[in-house]
Image 1 (cartoon, rainbow, N blue to C red):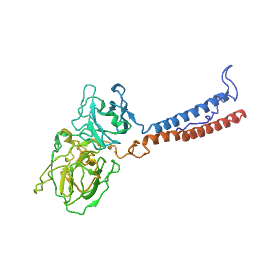
Image 2 (image 1 turned 60 degrees about the vertical axis):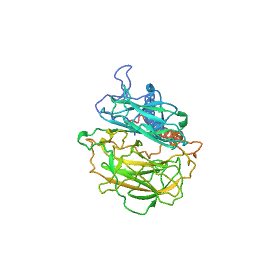
Image 3 (image 1 turned 90 degrees about the vertical axis):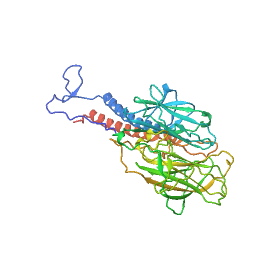
Image 4 (image 1 turned 135 degrees about the vertical axis):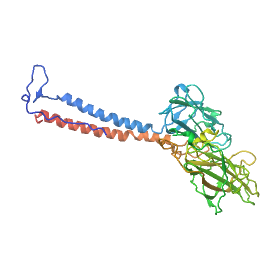
Length: 449
């Protein structure tokens, strides 16, 4: 809030008599203090009103701009984005610019979108510095190898890039399929580890852990990150449909890994495309499952990672995530290098012989295993991760019901925001005008003392 001082300093007691000018042409004074003429007071009042109006208008403009999407452009004209979540419009291939505050910091950039159609083209992300493509070796393609599932996820990391500025390139292989569908970009700046060489090495193999017998509970999977139920150890009955996103969430700390088992009992009647689990890290980046091996007690993992759904036949599949370690970034295509909320999407593609299937109900087993003591590798704690469950809006499409999105809400808010701003300006101006009028009246009556 802007505090504007209003009034006249109290004159001293050892100055010239009131109304006497010290010389011809000099301003009139009162006890040594120049007397403000009416136009001077008016100027002060107007200046005060203007000073009040500027910050209020600026606040209104800033509020109206919050949440507005950014559009990819040529590299020379690439808009800048900072840490946090951003809506990104993808009319064609294009770039975004990302600045980091410290050359030793790493920029993580995860991106995802839910397309209105199952059959979509692909696009990929790459990060460049001033000299070259310095993309991280992870699965940078958004929706890599997924043709008939509407949720796309991917990302890249800047730890191989030089300089304070990097550029994120979007290469749309089939841009028309994404028309009108914005992506969500998460940017996170990570400080360096204290002593990387002393940390546990990358996690590529994880032992399969027996899952305790328990009655399965029903769980409704989410269509997006916000709707994904956070599951704890146990067994759950779930339903998955072809092409539809089906997500669950699990919290992992340093030194922990996730185990997911999928099973169908003998004699079931479902017939559908296979179900393939996909791991997504807390920044919305596609991650890679680790290799499951037998436990020390001899418990064998499932033979496959995809659940085959054929009528009457029992089926079992399972996957394990890498143990969450900082040095996982050294392993190719492995993004389990930060703790937080991980997501698993059970992908059933709307493709192949049973693309028109109604889906399948099956059982999943969730288990979080602690492999080692949790210890932060940072000298300074990093900022909080962007929250992918934040609703930045969605876009209406021919195959989805209209949903009020963040962009339309921002537009509506922008239409409404001038009213409180105008009211504030009017109130402030009236106060200043009234105060100025009172002061002028007192001067004219000689009432100022």
